Amino acid sequence: MGSRTVFGLGHGAIAQSGRASGCPDRIPEVEWSVAPPNLRVNRRSLKMARTGIAILGVGRWGVHLLRNFLENPLARVVAIADPNPENLSRASAQFSLDRVALTHDWQTALETEGVEAVAIATPAETHFSLVTAALKQKLHVLSEKPLTLTVEESVQLCRLAEQQHRQLVIDHTYLFHPAVLRGKAVIQAKELGDLRYGYATRTHLSPVRSDVDALWDLAIHDIAIFNHWLGETPCQVQARGTGWLQEGLSDVVWVTLTYPSGFEATIHLGWLNPDKQRRLCVVGSQGTLIFDELSPESLSIQWGQLARQEQHFVPTNQRREGLSLPLGEPLQQVCDHFLTCVRHNQPSEISSGWLGAELVHCLVGLTRSMQQNGRSVSLQPLIRHYTR
Image (cartoon, rainbow, N blue to C red; front, top):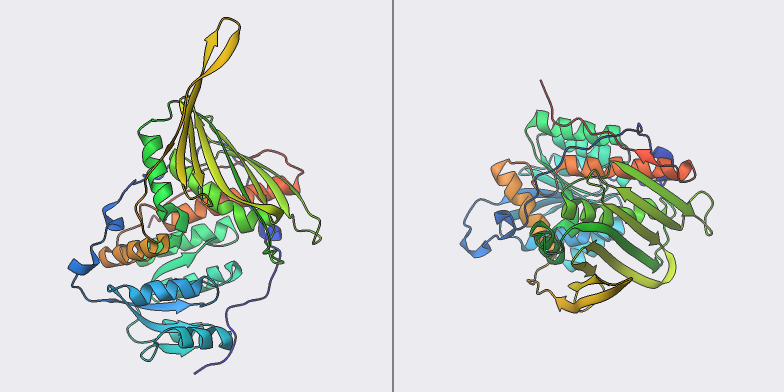
């Protein structure tokens, strides 16, 4: 068994890797599915051969992927790779891994007999090399976000997946959250009336990262939700950041996203705030849709409008409505969805590699804006799909 460290765990400032061309116009829209059939898997009724899975990285998040694939009747964990012996030891102690190959070498895991797909939960700077290697071995890939740190590398991986006729799915877990799915349905049904603007706050007091700033650490979640709910991607972005703790890394970031429809969203991000918030809202002419992850009632609508009375505006029809949500772990739905994509060898309609590339495109544009003191940056559309 190899013992060399191959994941490239060295930390570099992601802000330095932001390279993208400024651009106008609209990025091609993704056809969104509100409640796709592959999110409603009846596990008891499925009697099929199990998909062999290799898991690269069993740290803080990878261990949750491991648990879900071990519990999934459509999956068989064949190999686990992690350069950190302590991570492998903890995984072995927590789960029954008698029939699972454990290694420090990712290539050994990819070449283990029976592996058909790989789940990658390693630092973002390693994603390009690991996803490339897996796809070249004709393996399907579930990768943690962000897909890579540059637009060029993300697009290259998407095209490689198409060339290899293999599926590349990105674990944007929030897109499988019951509140996000229900919120998408509310907006599609036009229950809020005309959409006006959106805002989000994602703050906490630690963990503080030394490899990336607050933008790359936190923004991708809220951008993904806004894009999913609106069915479009930003055509213009702005960002300003301020740092106190580490030179060159912003601890607090303010983001503005402008969409082709004219909708505008602002996002407040920070890891230097004891007021922990996970809140995202869309304001319409009839009311505001509120996703508050830390509230017992995580999804609600605050109804209300303004009516003109002579020279004044008076609030009317004010009430709050909590929306019921089904139970279920979003990451379990991610794993179910990935296995369905693998089994049918069909691209993800929810969180494909191309969607991941679009989010990297947005983050790189925001990084450029921060480096230019908040100047507005236009985003050109990505050129999708491989052509022979």
